[in-house]
Image (cartoon, rainbow, N blue to C red; front, side):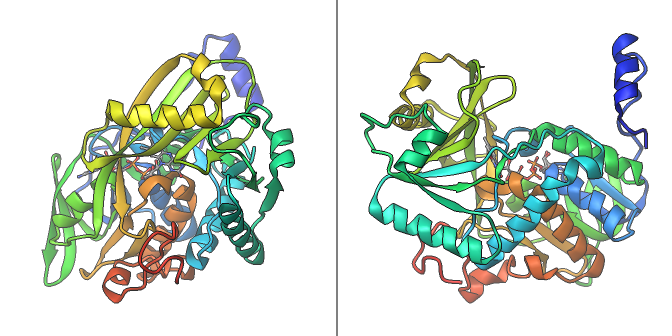
Length: 417
Ligand SMILES: Cc1cc2nc3c(=O)[nH]c(=O)nc-3n(C[C@H](O)[C@H](O)[C@H](O)COP(=O)(O)OP(=O)(O)OC[C@H]3O[C@@H](n4cnc5c(N)ncnc54)[C@H](O)[C@@H]3O)c2cc1C
């Protein structure tokens, strides 16, 4: 693999950047592969990369219906963290965070990993107690967490409203190792590294059918012809229900729109990711200076990659309640992505009832931070035909068996594992 280094950058910079070659090949699909991954988002690309590097499986194709990285991997608000409370989620997301910490060296690609901290604000005694419980549980699992009081939060993030806020800020739960990672660079970095290990990345190739014979998957049908495969992994995020249905699998998942917003660039204002505990709002500042923020889902099922005005208004209102200076900034861009919402807020990385067919999905709002861990565990599950202990709980059967992973604590059995 051509490695990026300072001398090459200098040379190209001085000679008009004309010497760069394409970062990955554009191969024609072969008639058959050992493993086909459907979906060239972050999870699909990371899976292909770890199949090749960790498990020695290199006869792999990633089939992407559009262009690599144009799905949610390039649409999210770039936040990474592992501040989960339930055991299976906490250990899985911590594994992912550790992989983020070494990703740039691993891929020789600048993914702009920035561990600037993620702060969840609390506004009442009850919320403080819930965060204290979560922080203590995290620390017992070996994950960093600090409970800050109002003064400590004020010193860390002076730009919030502490004097006249609609929901007074009482403190926050901080994970210093959390932060942001440049999302599209993650897709490009994994794509380049997977291609270099021999993985075929096939763009503009939609999977329209899954072939199953005698209870075993035998291949896929695509807009570029049929492709046989011993194993097929689905990693299509917001389209999980549609694609799983091609094999007759009905999933407890709904597709919803989530929007993101970016303001004009301003001087450094905010060097931590902050989430507002009195509503669903979160904000960080990008390296270009824009404030990047978002809130809750639009609240109706949709496959449209755009949102609507009522939710935009709702997000702006929550943002202003926490950080009134936001109102002085002009909104530069807004977009939406399709989320595969599972009914307990936790994902699937598992085998299915069809031999050789594997499922990765149900990422809800939080799949970006999972990307390396998800790819690693999915690759393990596909290569070994059994889950790794880190993803053993992320099955579809948990819904039938009543073993929810209700991380939000809002279901009938909150936080019971
Ligand atoms: C506005 C927004 C903000 C977000 N913010 C965060 C955040 O801050 N932190 C966080 O952790 N998560 C966040 N997320 C969630 C996160 O982006 C997703 O959970 C995650 O990216 C999903 O995995 P992926 O990258 O593989 O998805 P995608 O990039 O969507 O990849 C799936 C791919 O499958 C392809 N595909 C679908 N159907 C087919 C088919 N039939 N054949 C072939 N290809 C197909 C699609 O074209 C797509 O490229 C956010 C999401 C949105 C929309």
